Amino acid sequence: MLVRILLESLARRRRRKLLSVLAIALGIAAAATEGILSLDVGDKISRELRSYGANLSITPAADSLAISIGGVDYRPAGSGAFIPEDELVKLKKIFWRNNIVAFAPFLYVPAKVDDQNAILIGTWFEKSLRVDKNEAFATGLEKLHPSWKVEGEWPDDQGGTGVLVGRRLAARLRVGPGSTIALTLEGETPAPRVQVRGILEAGGAEDNQVLAPLALAQRLSGLAGKVRRVEVSALTKPDDAFARSDLSKLSPEQLDRWYCTPYASSIAYQIQQAIPEAQVTTIYQVADTEGKILNRVGILMGVLALAALLAAGLAVASMMLATALERRREIGLFKSLGATNARVATLLLLEAGVLGLVGGIAGYLLGSVLAWRVALAVFGVPVGVHLVMLPVCLGLALAVALVGSVFPLGRALRVSPAVVLRD
Image 1 (tube, rainbow, N blue to C red):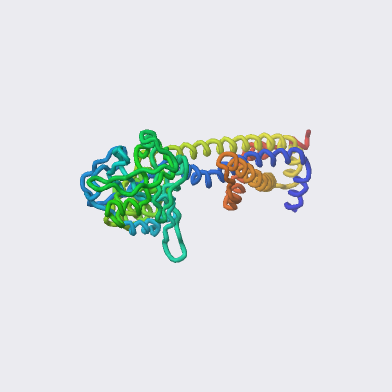
Image 2 (cartoon, one colour):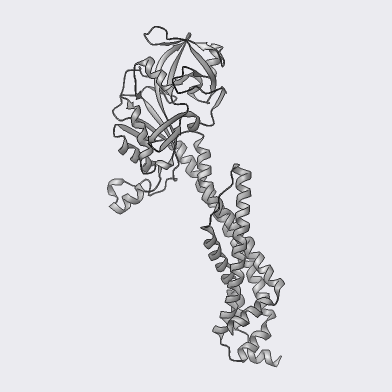
């Protein structure tokens, strides 16, 4: 009997019920759009921020006192400690290996370029690193610093002799892509001339340097298989109070939680475990900026979603209140025939629940389309299908519909059968 009454009630006053469903659907669509975007946007924003530089730096743990200006090591080539190049593959074998987006090693060699003092920097430009039999990882400066501008082309790592010359150094030398330059190491005879493959504009100290394939720099300096420093770009979670905890004071459960959270510090800790002879430090300027942006974007999305849900709840409440006032006679007659307040409340809440579920499904579908369009317009890449949001949307829609029905329900339960029948 209750099901029959519910179906007949839903069949009547279709316009008002459609308006209720539309209000719920619009509110859920806004919340679903922001929820779906938040699942993808965090990674997308983090990847965009990664293009502006690395957030982890690896140096030898037993290194001597550095002479560094603008991030460039000016010590003689043979001084200080080094990291074995073949140890770098371990970066893709840590727990958070999939969060390592890119990395590149650096070997700094003081040199003369034609008649100008400069630093020859050996590095990877586009390196395919063999992790195991079935996996190869593409990395290098092109992926680590995609915002760097190169006039010409990037040098070839595979036995190439071409180099990149920084923009300011190239202007002093009056060279461009296709020119040749002579490299002379300190105290050495001039090396064979090398071709300039491109002019680099990085906006930093690199604009005054020469970047060469790592193998070439190692061969010229006699430091085969060695690197001085490694820059790592990793997707991380913004630091919070727990991220800055003293590890010695954490319980085993808390330590596991910290270890299994992609904080910059926990990824640095894992890298140091994998490469014991290395010291890993966080570049906090990059990590903190990323954290602030992601936190503010998250807060903005949460506020917008809450505002949309509140608006939907108010719309549902007004619709249900108007419905309850229109159905005073029906409710009074229902109660005069023996229906209890519980039965009346069950009927009205079931009706609101059905409207909420329909609005939730419609809102999820509309929100998925909106999220797809927004992501495509802003990031140039559409978001995927997130079915995990469907039960969330249905739960929110039910909550909006039921909470919005509380006040109208109270008005309906106060209807007196005697007054309604007398009228």
